Amino acid sequence: MRIPLTSYPGMNRFVLDWLAGDERFLKRESGVGSHASGAPGSNTRPVTSDLLSALDASNRHWGIFAKEELERWADGKTITIVAGQQVGFAGGPLYTLAKIASLMRFKRDMEKQGLPVTAFFWLATEDHDFSEVATLNVPVSTLRPGADVNRQIDLLCIRAVRGADSRAVVGPLPVPEAMVSQLLAVMDIPRPAWLREGISLRDAFAELVASICGNEIILVDALLPELRRAGQPLFDQIRSKEAEIQRALAYRGSELEQAGYREQVVPREGSEYSLLFGIDDHGNRQPLADDPPPERISTSALTRPLLQDFVLQPDVFFGGPAEVSYYAQIAPLHEMLGVRMPRVALRGHVLIAPKRVARAFDRYGIDPAEVFRTPDAILAAHEAEGVARVHEVVEQGRRELLERIGEIGELALPADHSLAGSIQRSVGHLEFHFNKLAERAIKGLVRKDRERHAALRDLVSTLFPDGHVQDRVVSWFAYWCVYGDQLVERVLEEVEPDSAFFKIAVL
Image (tube, rainbow, N blue to C red; front, side, top):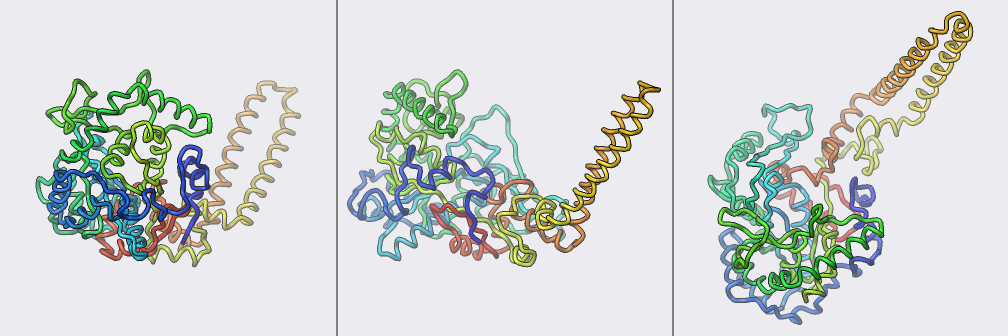
């Protein structure tokens, strides 16, 4: 099932226009295969031996053996691609898997053509949004039958909280033990090694990803000291050219606004755009002061892509809609700072539907683009004639009754002027009850086939749970517990990187 992204609720309008060919703010080449640097070997990367050793050691720690791959990459013998994500508990939402699958699909497709590819996945360990990484939404339909949960809800939310004033970077923090206990209980699984007691959010995420990707993807810890030191020249430039950068961002922001778009990152009220932060002795991100060593410098949402592009020099970057919009916002900075802009590509969008749920599409003639509505709204659209007749009968009855009330008023008002208020109140009550009657009649009409209504309820709760598109909020790990490697294989089969369509993969 292949559906245009124009039907995907909340899709960024800038991205839709960009996919359609609007290159005013961000260039778009025809096809992700036309990478920026030419043939492999044409762009030897000035990578220090310290950084290479650190990348090799960190990946070996997570179970990825990539020494030879890293050496080929440093020698410029491979196309370089990259994507990234926060280190969410138990792998985060489904779109994280879609990003990983986009990298793997591109890598495999290119290598079938004889073009070697090195794929990096950037672990955003320096972010401080704890609530985002420490939240996991598990579909109730994936839980073991005896799990003590409310089966009337779509998602079970597993969450941990911390002090509201904490700005500690999330990567090194230990995985909250309460979240581990709840996940193991509801999924009825033994404790995996990547959730061992005391493990950090970074290591848990990395080891889980390594377990599904093998050696196909190299992970990059954003807080790796050797990586930060490699970024020192960029940090120096950003600090020395801050005023020029602020002016360029403000001008680009006004251009985007005039074109009818919104900046993905806006300056704080009465302030400028955030560019760099400092990390204090307690791991908290603070406003940058003095002249800290590069290991103590943290990037913002706007400068993170610049650090990635400066150090890794990717040919292609795969990002979600927000990340594509970041690049449109910071495009002027690449030339200003001498950082080569990669080819920007949209990650693939894939939703998951169990076979028993997906049967409803064919069985009841449901267009996949319809699932982002309530079951009643979908069925009402398929009962157009009956719904129209209900509205017609209700409107006819309302009109006739109001005519009679009008006649009563004409007869009685000359004798009792105080009756006018009572008549008006009665009219209001009657109209309210007529509308409620119509609503109940339509619900009864569309629910007359209970089996059909239940099937649509399952379909909507799977793909649009609680009014959110599945891949934005639902845990992919929960589906992995049910389907295992088949989940990854199906997502890899269906994912279409840099496409104006999204897919529904049936399992």
